[in-house]
Image 1 (cartoon, rainbow, N blue to C red):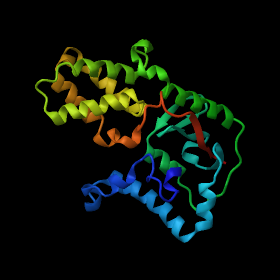
Image 2 (cartoon, rainbow, N blue to C red; image 1 turned 180 degrees about the vertical axis):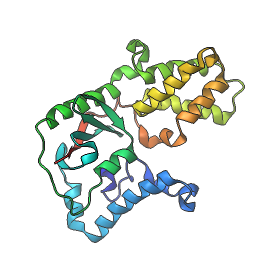
Image 3 (cartoon, one colour; image 1 turned 45 degrees about the vertical axis):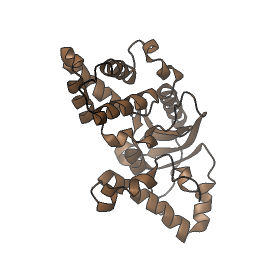
Image 4 (tube, rainbow, N blue to C red; image 1 turned 90 degrees about the vertical axis):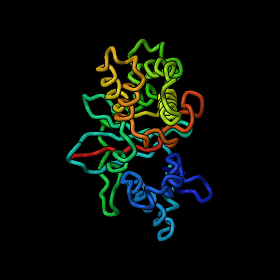
Amino acid sequence: MRSFLTEGEPIGSHELFNRLISKKTLEGDDEAEESELKYLQVIRDIREKDPDLFGKIKHLPKKARTAKQNNAIAGALITYFRRGKLQKFFMAQVKQASEELDFMTAAGLLESGSDEKKKKLAVEMYDLLDSNKEAFIIATTEEMAEPQERRGRDSAANILRILKATMKNTQKLTEDQELYLKKVLTQLEEGGLPKQTAKNTLKALDSLKNELVNPFKVLALLQSHIPERLLQSHYAEQNPAVFGKREVILSLYLSGE
């Protein structure tokens, strides 16, 4: 998000510019892109109409934290992390495991109006932050580069194992089909696939049982669970195991008071 703010830099890790000028976006057929365009437009409007506010946002310190009211999921902490160009969002709640959020879900929860009142940070926020940090470390661990060492405990690692086996039997697949599989492979290796997506995909793959040896069955299932938009470069532009240190960019606590 920060790279949205600086003139002359790329639009950001979400590579919105290339996506926003796509045929689908220009014709209004792609709801996801239109939604992301909304957030980009908000930032552009602030830059043009309120440069002082724009400057304050651009120079917010890392690890910034605040709180606002949200009765629907009170007691939750959303944290935005970055490692190199890879960006991830996690949400932790008391007595619940931290879960990864996709960009649009996180953006919707982070979105606040100009009249939004700041709430006090709760004491439990620090434990929730630790939970999100741990989840981010697991999601970007260097062991992802060698998934066999994970002993089958990671959904992405297991999908990677299945996919590598499938890639050995692609003689009858078209070039576009092979390209799709290679994109999925890259996202898995770089830790860019949302964990819930990976979990649901692995569950579906396991249901194939003996048909896992059929590349067409595997391909069809992957395409139904992993849409092309999750395979764009903005989800994992560089391998997090190699590039950049892990950073906490900002955190938002959702209060019920």
